[in-house]
Image (cartoon, rainbow, N blue to C red):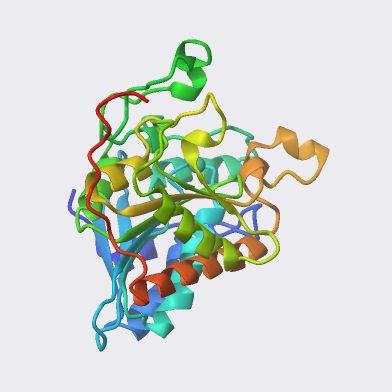
Length: 327
Ligand SMILES: [Zn+2]
């Protein structure tokens, strides 16, 4: 099926009244971008860069200033995991904040990388069903479907297999294939927005050992941290979150290992659990009742990273060869 025209697609999307009024259903979020496409045609354009497993278009918004030379490139993509909605809110808000400013960088924003999973969560909320969703339509965890460090160097998988679940193969899903095609540009910086945790995670995620550029990751992580104020997230190598933890085949190991892109996985918020009964509601685990503060913070660290690019302080690195041996 060829990609639809954005406006035609958008007009056909249902926009039901729903129980999470502080959040936008995906179609509502995309409809916020439509006026920008009309009012800033030289600054923002939309691209359908692939299709989901169920044939939904994958939308990317490309933003740049036609009057200024580009000082760098940044890819922001959100909501790879179905229940994590704060990231999409940040992505939609960031597009609206940045387009009128027309920064001197090439910026690509993908607000919803997993529209099928997202649609499932939207339907369940409408029907009052409390169900847990993470993957795409094939129930594959897209955040474990990439090509770098799919194998583990740890003895822990045999003891806690749930942490080391594998997908059918590298880039086995249409969503991850499409993201890889988009990432081949390649970008200087990429941020994959998740929830929750409160960290700016950097590679490696699939190995305990340090990435050769880990000090550069730390530095840029601290730049984003410093922009946030009171509730700042901290930069950390993801595999060092806990001694037993690895994420095999993650998007940031792929983007950094294959393309040298400075890739962060941002765990936005520190969960939405505010009351005891929230533990029973899967949606609440990831999504605070009021996402406003997290959206404002998101715009701050995205802006801070953009300024690093404009200043020439964030450049893509020579792609590191994945280490041959286990540490
Ligand atoms: Zn996630």
